Amino acid sequence: MSPLIHSTAIIEDGARLGSDVRVGPYCVVGSDVRMGDNCQLMSHVVVSGHTSMGSGNRVFPFTSIGQIPQDLKYHGEASEVIIGDNNQIRENVTINAGTEGGGMVTRIGSDNILMAYTHVAHDCILGNRIVLANCATLAGHVEVDDGAIIGGLSAVQQFVRIGRLAMIGGMSGVTKDVTPFTLLAGGYRAGLSGLNIVGLKRHGFSLKQVGLLKEIYRILLQESGRREERLLEAEALLSEDDTDGRYMIEFVRSAKRGLMMHGRA
Figure 1: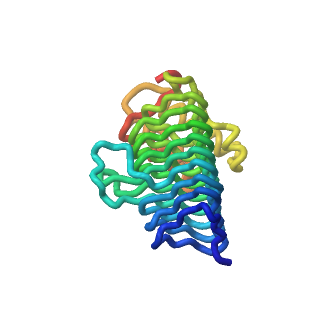
Figure 2: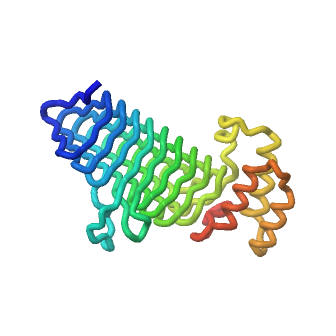
């Protein structure tokens, strides 16, 4: 079916909309926007710039996607926003385009929930099945791996990476990388408080897998000593099929911003 466009919406020449797209009252869709099938813009949504969106996305009122970044180094380059499938982007969300200094793209995967008033800044890279709770804020160049949850009113500093299935408690300040499978809480002076046990159980991790991750956590994030020695100690625990443990270790090894550690940072 052809797109269903409200009479008050503005669709600029050149925009390409898939089948069964619904565009509600007072929405504006720019000329360089590409939108897949079965997307819905509720009302008062602005999608601008070089924005590509997959299928099945629902965008709620007063959201802005694809506007130029809030970065003083930006000088008009034709950067992009690329969004996957089946995302829920709630009221008053802002998603900014990328910059030349960050790969020219802000990228969001599929099956994510961005709750009201969340902000995804320039050059952020988000995976799949992520939850950003109300008013969570990602500064530029932040990476969030699959299945992570970022609590309401939390702020993530630029260039930080958040690992898979990590959970950030509400009102947390995140200034360093957050290791996968962990739980971070504590407000402005946040620190790790162990594994995200509930999240691991919900995703089918066995008691054996959780036990291994606990031991890796203890070695890498609670003990003192040289990091390389602790990495070797953790690697000695792995068998060939311990892919989650290996991912956790490699995340720690590759951290560039430092790591949020156990207890207060």
